[in-house]
Image 1: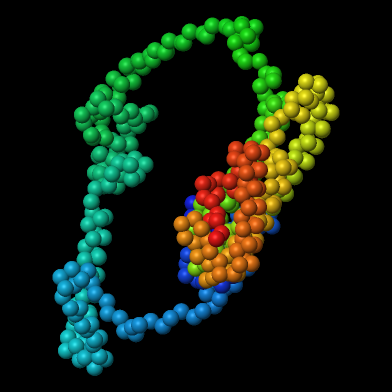
Image 2: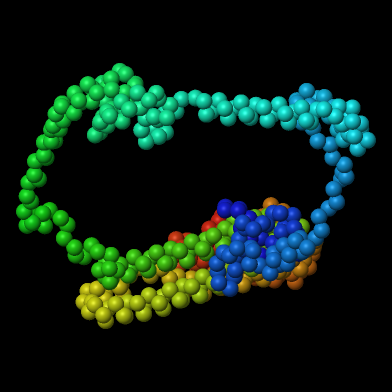
Length: 416
């Protein structure tokens, strides 16, 4: 049997490997599913299962199916919106047609090259004939000035520094802006005011600050873990996790209303119930192993911590007087007897399939020996249930509590 979690909150139990393989091929079990590993009692990814790997590898080697069409037609956006048929592609002109067109107009290519070259020459002349900006050269271009103006430019002293201000409305670069330059040089720079400094923070006494802060001590995590209360807290958390896994497994087994008439019918009800009981027995076996390991490990931790931290007799008595989560030995024994008796009773019903009837809380067998055997097992089961309830099994969070809640108020039919 394979217990698979298809997705969070939905689990499915597959009886055989063929059922699991069919679910993988159909896509019900995919790479996001998880399978319950009984040896380690953990959920692991289905991709680690060898059967899943083999099916995925087989699918990867399968060739792709052939395309249904061999010819494809492409439409533009306008034809798709208006529903117009796609225009037929124009065939490229043949070499004869191209040579005929060139022979008919031999002057087209030279004329085009001539016009292009003419426009290029005009553009170069226009670029060189325009005025140059003042920053294109180091000073005034004296080659284009008359002789008198060139001499005047050489005699004129160059300004030491040119200052441009936003106050001037003129954009010329001559001597008209000298007045603004001299004015700007004479105006003293405006002094920037310093921002007032912030007041200094008051001094705090170290002693007062230390009194206000929480003092380190027993609240730290390390010291809390080394106390008996911390050990008891971890002990309860570990048991809660183990019991939660047990409850999840029994819920997957679907044992609600165990003695309902639908479970006692020979048309599949008995067979399915026997499979669920086998799964529950496996979950209980794993729970017993984890329970024993927990008790052993935490007892060793207690001995080591008590010796290291020199726990007092009060702390030792606190650990010994803890509420142990381990199921009492009486309930452990009753759980084993109950599971064995249930399996035997459903085995009798399975062997007598089609030879008994369940009507109004009674069961009638065609074989008298089968009726006697069923009656003995029914009385054993009822006695075990009464003893378990008297021992406090109804309030137990262990296996017997789950079995009693699964049986509920249903009762086995009386044999006739």
